[in-house]
Image (tube, rainbow, N blue to C red):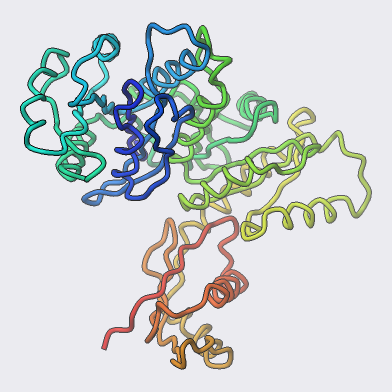
Length: 438
């Protein structure tokens, strides 16, 4: 089912963002006493007891207000409830139950979505006596925490894991290469999927008894099975115009988590934006395979140097992500769509690749002896051994006498050499440095 998604909801100023920061283990969301500071979603991933979990922090919920921004925030919560596997409904022990809490509790009860009732700001024993009143919300046993001090946050995470593991598996797609088609609006994502599915070379299948996202599509191509995850669909909402970006971000985040390879589609007539690079970096952080699909190539005036020019420009913009392969397509003209599937399959296989330890050491040990890591604080740094600890996604481990002193520039040097020799086209590499065992 991919990484389960937990949404933190509640009225403004109950400590949702503080709890979000506590759970993910770092300060990321904006935290302020001013109600309504969290206007947009914030999401991240945490790991607890071997289970990875995605977490969404939403804006404050004000069901009866008619202020423009609060209507948008309310819809963010509704979207998060629709998309999440588990809801954390946060209330304030020091304020007690408010009308807004009761309204939101009613909506959550009607949603039939599994909800944990989290009573925040239980900072001392005296506030323990205040939590009983929250039984009246009808959402089960209140869970007291203090997000600001971390009190009982571990117990809350244990409960989250318990409930997440009880969520039924939604997809039986393990035999499929899962491709998430992601990109900004109007770049051709849905047209790409629809064109593939309508071609006679594709065999579109519907798997009996499989519960899946309504925008998932299955196809067979060259004796391989593919699951296409299209992020373009938007659910009809009265105020969806206020939250298209929010909805798009949540859907993109979920789709990316489920994928083996991200097909990131760009209009070739437009430069890569900061937003594009941010999403690509998120895909790399999640160690997904990545292919950059440059659509609308039919609109470009071309000569024999055009692709060379575009490739250089894009690689310069990608920076450290320049290992991502590019393919130039026209969905309208049906150009290179199946070559895109071929390239995605190649990246998928690269992500699964495992290099024998003997080959890694045969290549790297002479290299690190001729190009030594720079000494730090008078200490000579040696790299003694390298191995691939994991594939799919790949994890490469270098053992050293002083792993904490190896400079970032030398780490990049080793990763570049790794790619030059062993490939890993379109695959983010996790390269770590550990202390050599004595």
